[in-house]
Length: 398
Image 1 (spheres, rainbow, N blue to C red):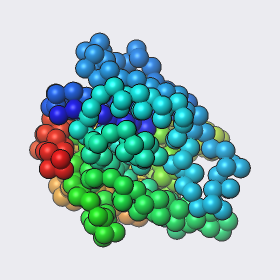
Image 2 (image 1 turned 45 degrees about the horizontal axis):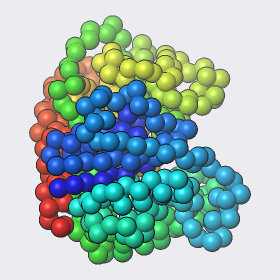
Image 3 (image 1 turned 30 degrees about the vertical axis):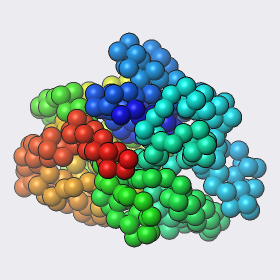
């Protein structure tokens, strides 16, 4: 089997969950199929740099990239509201990348073209014009749902209307995409169910995010104070919304119960207001080079997401490190979990505070929950098993 993988961001460096998801499936496919070719978009936010890749990976994937300026242009964004094109997606199209796809398809015959996320779908017509390969969309999220939730949560009337329009555009676009592909691999069961609810006309299979479990070591830390932490890029709106809720509503209630507790934050593009306000016992590490050290140095991961989709890669990584996770229902959406066994679900500041106190008093055993979480990831999210499942799905489509 010959597979062309088209990516909206480079697999490396692993600066966010999307990169990690792409990298692990790329490595899995390299091990499972005869030939893999990777074409990736490079952007200011996610630049391609060959130095991050081993010679073996380069040789086996023949990875190539093209830079696209995907920065939001306000004039284009508002004009697209009138035309009902999805600007969120169309800004990922470039003639240069399109020409690279054409050149690649002319030079090789592929059985499968794997599109990573909705943002590579502007190239569907090109693929169809120059190849007979089956087109599989690896859906990282149902994008319109994210913006719909953000619209509902927004207190600004103008912003609420704009986000609702954006959500409607994306929904129309996502439904149109379904008519032009041969299959969808979702990364969460909930997204799969949503596609079926939308009467998706092509086969849909849940093939979750996978990790290389051998790279995640459990390191026990004996911290004097209980250390809570949050990690995530602040240029993703759901994370920004979550951190605001955490600092302004959840953290004060946790401190009422545990005055010496610490909250450690990490992630790129931290907003200025976090630095300008005096939050007690909050330590802002900003963008970090080594996420694994940051995670292992702390105790309890907080995931206070109010709007999102797909699957939380950082939760799976936290579980792999044997950490106890306290998350909203939306934050854990898409994951298979057992509440109070391998994760703790909390949907209000009071529930987060109650969970924190019970962990502090050992009413909830954080070591036991963390170990259960680790075992759950080993069973359900090993990238080698996931890759075999994806290839099996490819076989069923051909």
